[in-house]
Length: 128
Image 1 (cartoon, rainbow, N blue to C red):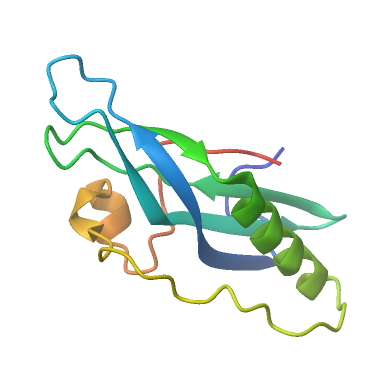
Image 2: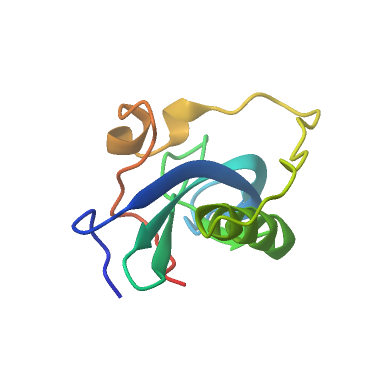
C-alpha cells in the first residue's frame, strides 16, 4: 500500500480515542488516556486508502508511548470519511466534544506538533 502523498486525491486530519503505555522501565508513569490521538486518512486512486496514526510522548520521561486505540472511534471516523469521499449523502456525525483535560500538543513528536495540521510522522502508522 502506498504510504506517501504521491497520487493522493483526498486527505483528512481527525482524531480518535486511545490509551498509551509508557514502556520506559525507569519511568513512574505507567500510562495515560487521550481523547485526541491524531490520525491522517489519505485516499488514493482505485479505492486505495490508508491512515497514519500519530503517537504521543509520556509527560514524565518524554519517551514515545505504545498506543491501544479505541476501535469504535477509529472505525466510526474512518467509515464516515470513506463514505463522504464516495459521495454518500449523510449527516455529519456528532463526534461531540467530551469533557476531560486539555490535549498537550507539546508531547507530540516535534515534527508533528510544529506542522499545524499534525499531518507528518514516521512514528507509528497503521495501513488499512
